[in-house]
Length: 424
Figure 1 (cartoon, helix red, strand yellow):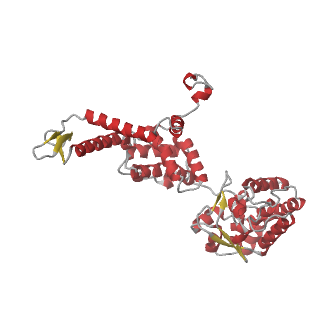
Figure 2: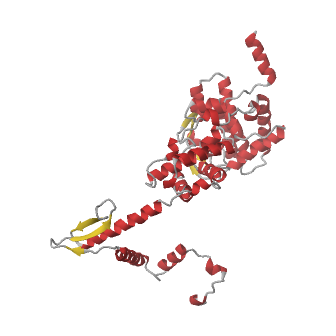
């Protein structure tokens, strides 16, 4: 066996352990007692603080113990501390200098140094995809900017005002991109307030005239955001063909999942997570989703609220066909609706099916999310109440539904005929 004392420093394997790993190893193998080491370290720190204390600790005639601490507000620049015992005086001194050290460290905190701590805190409250987007926005807008290295206690409202307006101009921000940009500085500085690093958030005092300084957003062309009736008919045709050919032994129900999304407006992660127990007659409860990437199943949706979605006969038929295929293969029909095993169908199996089908019918590839927009637009075209549509897709308010999901699926010819009739 090799002598531990003779391990060469240039040996890569001997240089691959962190200080925490080495400490853990020593503790677990009884080489050192971490608890004892911590006690010794605290004692050493206490001695260092007491040795650096510039004033005498003494006992008065009344039996109580006294010392001073510096206080510029007092006549002699110092303040007397009186306690019932020497130990209590020493405890006060140590706590006092520790708080000074903490205050000094807080004065050095910047947006850059606080970012990882804040993002870890934020990750407790939002989806992983949101955190990934925030990191992308940080790298794009913040990572190379000098302002993130200015101590927060020195960051003024004017500093932020000038920088924010410069960034708006630099990146030609729209209302949407500005919303993503400002989320970071607003929420990180709010977090700094909660951590008592700063007293108030200076960004909140900055006024941005969004109508004047932001670039107007133009709604994307209808044909790029939804599937037309003709496109959807063709897509359904190739999806059925794909399903009947049984080319995918594990994910052969993906074609059904694709068609199901057009009939229910569910997201990809949600369609992957649908179980038979979620089906109640002619309705379905959407209460879970599969995260991407990672494949983690979480018992909530993107909006965190469960929602009830009516199932039209075509949707119910797809569920029946899925069950029939599972029974043919001897697969459980009590688990996930669109899976051929105990695990949910892969997120990418569904998204790749959309890509393949678009290419087969010869149209520009439209994402799975466009199926959700197609569902909303179809219902609105059928004069279904906007509040009902909002509830079906799980939006918080009608503005989101109308502004981002409402598109015309008619062809130019159909629109012209409708106008002709309307204006006749």
